[in-house]
Length: 254
Ligand SMILES: NC(=O)c1ccc[n+]([C@@H]2O[C@H](COP(=O)([O-])OP(=O)(O)OC[C@H]3O[C@@H](n4cnc5c(N)ncnc54)[C@H](OP(=O)(O)O)[C@@H]3O)[C@@H](O)[C@H]2O)c1
Image (cartoon, rainbow, N blue to C red; front, side):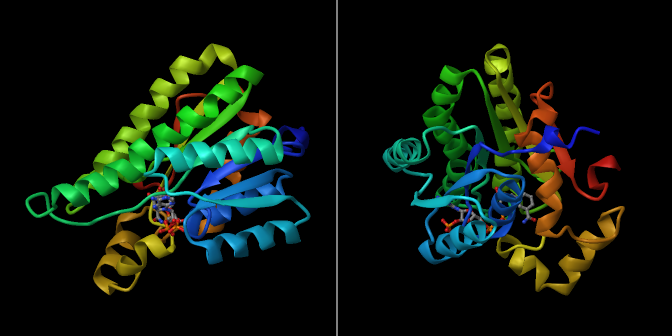
């Protein structure tokens, strides 16, 4: 096994939603594999803590306060990132929100918030960063999908629609850039213990439903995305594009 296949030394990654949860743990995993990391989110305290944790690993990190609903803010942050780091090799489109409501109760505003954050935001960041990758002839885009992009659950109409969209967006991006050195893949996690799902973790009935529904019989831990994100960011995945890798303890194998 050539371990340098997974080496991210000399690479620069942008991770959105990097102030907490899965974004934080993926940013740390990329840094552990050798990457310097630009951290995007809105919560300055969270961003500062992740920057410090990456510096403690001996890698470089900078944070940029960005609302991914705001195109001008994205473009400004990408420009500053390129000025600061000189290059971007990896984009992890991870920021996301959820509003759990039955189909007949979700409001147009709630629908727009979820779809705009989870789907349009990923498009806007890719539009800002990928031209730079194409000009250099290499890049890795990693989009956060979910098992709910492939299966349904009641009360998840906006979220599942957005994540199904992420899986399709990943395929189209992959096809458009396949011959130009940019690979685009998605990660489809099951339920992982992060702030996003705090409400479910505190509800014993729903917490146990997820355990019962998962062939491996447990929730995921944020560190368990480290392997897949490093793989998709590294040379090891150079002939993999347009795919969604489910990290779900077997949920979607039913
Ligand atoms: N946890 C799970 O079980 C699970 C399962 C499948 C998929 N996922 C997906 O994984 C991703 C991360 O989820 P998580 O569980 O880590 O959630 P989380 O702990 O709630 O973190 C969400 C992140 O997204 C950022 N964010 C949200 N809206 C934003 C906006 N408008 N602009 C910039 N940043 C924004 C937040 O940063 P600020 O608040 O600082 O802006 C935060 O860093 C999401 O795409 C989610 O759908 C999670």
